[in-house]
Image (cartoon, rainbow, N blue to C red; front, side):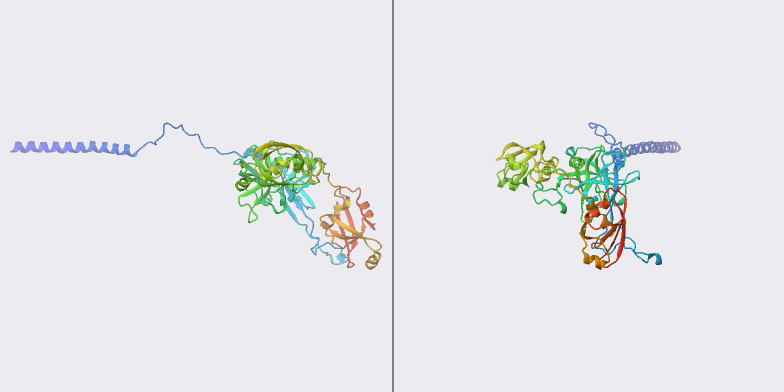
Length: 493
């Protein structure tokens, strides 16, 4: 029994030892197996190459080229003649040390683009229209008084000039090559925040935005206005007007002009005048002082499916001719009502703004091939474009007499009025418009008796007093109002 018990005990110890050893070994394997299952390397599709790191569009070069060539435009406007604010001579000022302060002139701001190194600047007409003074501040903070070389309300463009050379300027791009979806920069001075750059894409081309002052009652072709804009979603706000729309190469492709907004601030849409049209306007203003506007002499309508069905037109391309002006270019060339114009020169036109823009690049007297379809058959006609007067003459800038710069209409004062006012001579202001006199605070009815202490009896006296004066030279005007109050006004020409 003792031997059996000993064998059993030894066997039991051996079994327990074997079980314990097996547990230890099995546990390590299980732990290793668990950790191998927990770690799974990332799955890959071996048939696809590894992707390159993602990169974005770099706008820094375009910004570096454009920002120095965009200027801040500050305009000063005449004081409203209807306001009861004007500068009067006060005979008691030496006793009491007071006089009525001269009212401050209204001011506004915008942007402009330098287009030549000798100081020519493009901006919007609405930025400078009616302004008494235009001040330009460069990106390096230098300031100049600008001369308005010319304005064109039809394209909302104006050309300015400052007396400076070796200026940074922008290179013209080609707005015909601009594509929808292309990245662009808007550079300007919104809300007086100078040298501001925003980015967006071209959202549409040849957009007609129907500005109230640019209404096109005659299909946009016989009218003086051209309404064909590049639409972008680059942020543009008040103060950006006249600034640059730039491509990623830093080339000028448009002049920012308007926004679509219910609030007066940017809400997602902005519009720029194409640079190809801008170049032509600038060239005209430089050479003639006036834009040479060409007309094709037709009334047009966009072609749509309903119109095409009514007129049995088999292709929805081109612009439908609804009528012609008598003796106009289109009539003389053989264009007929019902024709569909598909090309002006080499450019395809599919709506009125596109045709409008293309014709706007020509001058009166230019001959251009117009491609059209008549009864679904293609024809090419040579059209000699005319001006608004129906001829091919150059439109000269009207000569402005020195007196007109004063912005007033005058009449001589009769003897009875001179006696009532206790004067021996004088020239009465009967009507005031934008000009030097209105800006100085003079009101209608004022009788000018002396200019620089010399008597004024007639228009000839007034002209003589203004001749041979340098820009900015001061002038002193003396006179009397209908109530007998005397006043003195000083300003620069």
